[in-house]
Length: 596
Image 1 (cartoon, rainbow, N blue to C red):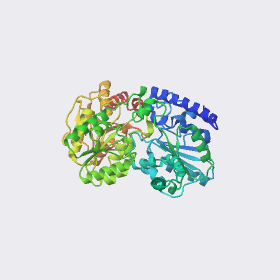
Image 2 (image 1 turned 45 degrees about the horizontal axis):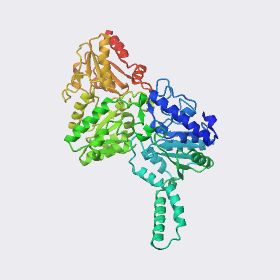
Image 3 (image 1 turned 180 degrees about the vertical axis):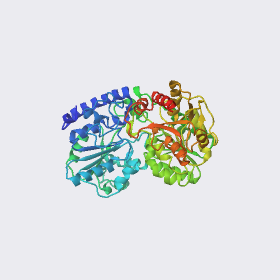
């Protein structure tokens, strides 16, 4: 069934549609990989929304777009090439469909975006409902809380749906979630209350005890209904898998003009037994439900466990990404030394700054695309005080199927301008250990960035030191290729062989500081810088700025990604689209070497 067919459908038709959607999603993710558990958990909710509201005239805004597969299917989009080049994105994208009201790859944005859309609607004089669907613990994100608490008055015809599944990507440990769990007891209280009311005539100690229980629970519940104090009419909680209840409740809400917060309780992974049993494992999977491979994350987890055994001051900090950044073993071995801030990157970084100021040694493990949300905290709270915080930045460079909302192309241009901050890019997992120890001993703010996926060890290993910041991998005199980052170094070595040009390939594992000794030595040669990141403001720019600062003329070619957003595809396809493949680099090496 499509959106126009499901409008006003019966409960039986809605249940039939939900079963079809689940089958489609399971088959698509099995074939293509993707986010499974989060999407399975909202099937009935999405069906009920489309049965009641009038999309795209009404606006449905997702928070963390990995809940949108059923929405895409109902709006006529095939998942056959989900997250593949020229297929549909795994996240809502207004460029893909008019039904996607707002882009959603990061968390916490839906309520603020919904309030803003309502403001535009009311000022222009339009009439439609705005529905913000927030889940997977995104309500604990700072942006979401700011939107909730910034004003006591909320716009009319505005509905926030809280998808409460007890999870973010990993388990949800936040105090806010505990409060929501207490609020979920309303339903049980109402049932128990009817029993108590019938027994109020009981006398003696038993009657007094019953009355005490009733008034204690009632007072406790009133304290937890804080949404109504923020301008919402709180409704719920309701069973997010009961279509009769959902259709009835949403039908009633659709007739209201006042702002409403609907609390829906769902089960992440619903309808697929393996995903129900292990929703964190099935949050994001590869083809045939295999776990995604990430060599650097595995290596980092091992390194942190080894170092933690030697130094009790080491602690790890993450933001709802324990498994994704390789900290699962660390969490098992050192549970009291892992701090999960939830989907709150800014709080995680400032918490790490407080730890460092207090005398322990935090390692912040985060994806590049999420670290950019905490830029101010890195500048103000960590680097301004020159605190010894190590940032291990996963998924730096092209990320593949997650696409433009998750690319790790921005971090280098942003981070290298921050005073006191050193930036490293190891060529392989073996060098990651050396770089980590070097950063640890510096006792200043450091970033170690590396890509996702499989990363082969390149064999050669020259320990990093203040004197040997960079590492020469192949010999050559006329043309020097300065490659920074694991994929760039590997491609440079392959491109040298394909081009037939005997260029010198240098592993530039420190981006800040630069190896100025080596740069002085090669100033009279032809130089290519190569990186998997934006060319503007990146590693190549740093090299160019170094030479410009001495007014030194050099023959320099900067090779990096064009300054544009890169859609979903494989990492190799993304490199080819940006002319950063091995073949592209080989052609550029050969052409530059032949220039006079």
